[in-house]
Length: 409
Image (cartoon, rainbow, N blue to C red):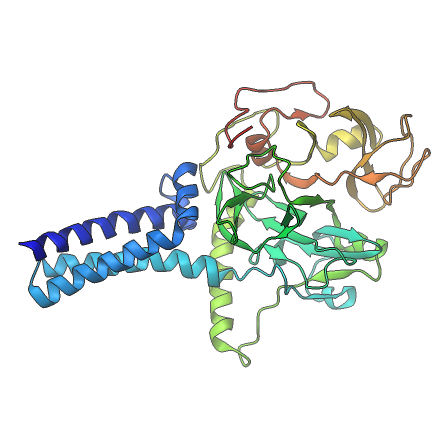
C-alpha cells in the first residue's frame, strides 16, 4: 500500500511539474499553449528544482512499477517518457541549441562579410572609440548575445538580440559593478528574457533590469547606443569596421554540430518568417494593443528618465529629416541621414534648436552624443507593450492605463 502511494504521488507530481516546465520554457509552446508571465518567471527562477522534480519523480514511478508492480505499467512508462522529454527538451534547446556568444563571438572584415550579407541588409551597429561592429538580424538571431573578451574599444559591450521584437540593443553586462553571466531563457510579450546566472533573476531585454527590481530601477545594465543602417552604408561609413557572422561549422569538421545548427536554423525560419512578413502574431502574450500604427511598423523608441518617446522614420523624413523636441527634461534631436539611410537620436545640450546634423553627430551648433537608450527599428506593438505610456511622433498622447504591468515601479 505504501509503495502504491509513493508511486502515484511521484508520478502525478512529476507529470504536473514537467508539464508546467515544458509549457512555460518550451519556447515554441507559446504558439499553441497559454503561457502567463507569472508562471514563466517562476520557471526561470526555479528551473533546476522543476527539472529535478520531473526527473526524480518519473524515475521513482518507473522503478516502483517495474520492481514492485505498483500502478499501471503502460501508463507509467508513457508518462515517464513524456515527462523526461518535457523537462529535457527545453533544457537542451535553451542551454545548448542557441549557444549564446556573450564572450566568444567572431567578427570579420567587411570584405569577408560581403559574401554573406546583401548590400541593402539592415545591420545593428555598436561603436566605441573608433571601433565599430555590425550585426545583421539573420546572423544574430540564433545566438541572441554577441561579445568578445577584449570588449568594444576596451569596454565590456555586448549586443543582445530578440528576433520576435526585431531588436538589437547594446548593454554593458554589469549591475553595480558586478559582471553578469547571461543565459537565454525565454521570451514573453514577444521580447527576450535573459537570466543572470549569479542571482538567478530574469532580465527583460527591453529594460536591462532584474525582474525583482522593476523596469525603472537604477540597478540595471548600462545601455549602449545602437543604430541601424544598410550594410552598404555601414561599409561606406566605417570601411575598417567589423561584422558579426554566425557561420555554421562545415559538415566535414563537425557533422553533429552541422546537423544541429541546421535543424535550429530551420526551426527559426519556420517560426519567424510569417512573424516578420505579416501583421499576425506567433505568440499572443501581449498586454497592450495600440492602433496608432500597424503592429509591425518599425519605430525608434527611447527613454529619458521615466519618459518614453517613439519615432517612425517616415515622420522624421516628413519633417525635412530633423525633429527638435524635449523628452524627460532633455533637449533631443531625431534625424534621418539620407546618405547613410539611418535614423539617429541625439542629445542636444547646446541650448539652441539644431538645423543641420550629419550621420556622425556633427551639427550646426556642436558635436552631439547619441541617446544610449534608443531601441532602433523595433516593432511598434512590442515597444508600446513595454512602454504603454509612450508618446509617438510628438503626438502628445500618453496612455497610463497599463503603467505598472511589468514589475515594481
